[in-house]
Structures are given as C-alpha cells and as structure tokens.
Length: 490
Image (cartoon, rainbow, N blue to C red; front, side):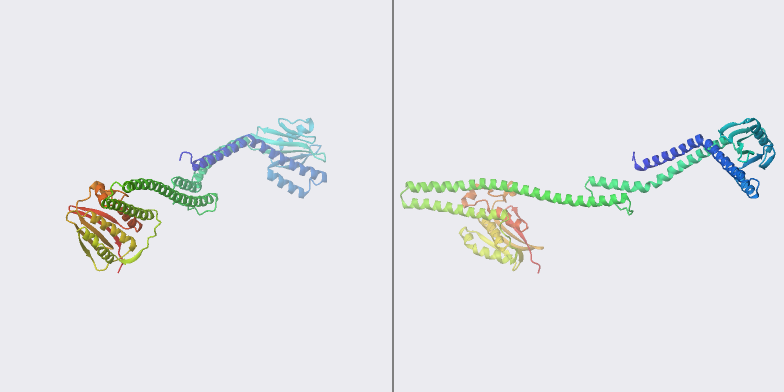
C-alpha cells in the first residue's frame, strides 16, 4: 500500500527520534559550556558560604571545620588558600599554592584581577577565569575577603570544556544515528501489530462493498481496533439481514407486479376470446330468433329446425361459460385442491363405462388396459374432469379407424394415464399452443362438434395445481394425451 499507516508510523517515529537527538545535540553544543561553568561557580559559592560562616563563628581553624572543608573541597576538586592581613598563610588545601598566593597578593594590594577574565564581581569577592600557562590549564577562581578580615582565594580546574562538548556531541551523534535506526526497525515491527488488524478490517469492508458478508473480524484484544472490528461484524450481520429482507421483499414485489401484469393480460385475453367465441352463437341465435318472429317459413318443420338451432347454440354457450368459470377459478387459485387417496384405475374404468353411450353413438371402439388397483394422491373430482376432457377430445378426433386406447400403468413412483386415439397427428407448430385458452388446431372441425378450445386449458390448470406432469405425444396413426399422479406407497 503506497500510503500505509505502518510506513507512516515508522517514518514519523524515526523523524521524531532524529529530531529529538538533533535538538539535544544543538542544546548540548550551545549551552553545555555555560552550564558547566555555572556549576563550578555554584560550587565555589557554596564553599565560600561555609568559609564565611566559620570565620564569623571563629571556627575556621577548628578540627571539625577542617574535616568538613576538606570533604567539600575534595567533592568539587577545589584548591583553597587563606591569608591574614600580614600575608601569613592561615589555611591551604590543594596544590600549586604559589600561583594562588601571587593571584591573591595582586588582589590584596592592587585590587586587580591579574590575568583573569571577570565573570562576576561583588563587594567582598570576584569570580574570574584564569589560564595557567605553566600548567596549560584553565581555572575558575574566586578571590575576596571573609567576615573576619582575612583574604582568600579558591580555584577549581576547568577541564577542557570545549573538548568535552565536542566529544559529548560526537558520542551523541553516534548514539543518535544508531538509536534512530534501531528505533525505526523496532517501530516497523511493533506497528505490524497495529496495522495488521487495520488491514484485516480494510479487506472485510472491501468484501462488504461486494455484498460478501461471510468474513468476520477475529481479533481477541480489547483495544479500540478490536472494538471497531466487533462493531463491523455487527454491521455486517445487520446489513446481510437487511439486504436479505430487502431482496425477499423485492422478489415478492416483482412477483406481485408480474402476477398483476399477468392477471391484466389474462383479463384482456379472456375478454377478447370470450367476445370472439360468443359472437358466432349469439349471431346465430339472434338471426334464427328474428326469422321465427318474422315468420320467414310458416311450416312446422322449419320452425322446429329454427328452434333446434337456437337451443343447440344456447347449450354450447352454456357449456363454454361453465368451462370458463371452472378455468377462471383454477387459474386464480380460488378453487381448493383436495388431495386424497383414491384408485385411479377404478376411476378410469367407471368413467369409460359411463361414456360408453358416447362411444357407441360415434361408432368408436374403446379398449381399456388398466391394472386392477392403483392408489394415487390427488383431487378425485378434478382428475375425473381431466379424463373426461382427454376422452371427449379423443372421440371428436378418432378419424376413420375410430379406435381409442385408454391405459393406466405404473411408472416408478407414479401412475400414468394415457388416452390414444387414431387419426391425423397434430401439426408440430401447434403442439406448444394446445394448452392455451381458445386455441383450435382445426377451427372448422372444432366448430362442427361444438368445441370451445378451453378443455385442455382446464387440464393444464388442474395438473399444475397439483404439481404433476402432463403432455401430448404424436404418432403416425394418431395422438396420445397423458398425465401422471403420485402413487401411494404400499
């Protein structure tokens, strides 16, 4: 990642560490010498205070004070020389008393600081820096008068402060570079513990943008990132649930829209087809009724013929309206399907027996091949209507051979009922449309026997209401319509 937090953390920490080291170097180089000299001045002033107190109390030559003074001078590496007004030596601590005597004598008699550079001057003392050429050393001196009138000089060596500063700065630079590099390496690996969970959260959020909610944050710590991860898990679950609900609602909405559109289309189609189908019989009834009223033919035979036509057309209209009502109830789900156990073989045999008069009237030979008992699940009343539609279609299209074969056979977990009639096969282009309302392969022939084109639509609606299969098969010498029902396990 070009701008990863890990790189930013490492860069910021390393830069901060380098900046702190550089600042320390600058402060050390600028103020260390002054700080060092100030330290030495404070040490001289502390010893001066002790000397003044002892001189005021008359304890300057006591053993206890000598011990205390030696300890203090040893601590700060201070040389001390005290002279009375006659230049007699009262107390000496440290080395090189001659140089110190000369410096103090100049101060006593000439009130001069000699070769020194004055750093601080008071009424009773002066502090100066002196370069001892013979010893090649630089000293900080304090010269003055004590409370008892004696003169004193104290000297403390100033090690080469500038050289010490240079060495300290050089050492600080080495330590700083090593520290910055080491710190950068350490922070690079330490920040991995912070950036890894963030990268994991980034990947989870990326998958969430693609509606993938399977990944979960697995962090175990109790820090802010872990809390964020758990909240993202909750967000993912909520989004998944909400999107699922939205998709379900959208799917139902689409189904409702599709159902509404389908209902509107069915209503339009229904009205168009009914208008078309009823137009002819209504026109016939109207024409023959007007003929009877106007007395076109006064003989009884003509009047009887007119009346028969009117009655026949009225019966056809009544039958078609009944079938349309039945189909309407099936298609709109208003008719309850009662699933019950019954013997399909017995149902078919009973119906064929009751329809024997229809077959004999049309001089048709009916052959039945059915097992003794085949129990199935289905709506017995509606299945009988399917058999009736198949059989009536077979009677009307039996052709010259006038043979109908009805079979009821077991086929795996189902029972298949088929009705075959001899005659001409159905044209291939008409097969997909057979189950549509008011569709007629041969409209003239259908009109001849009074068909409405609704029977197979009723078959389709009944079988689909029970979620069972149905169909038609063409043969060279005829057509077979079939349907299946689920068998009752023995």
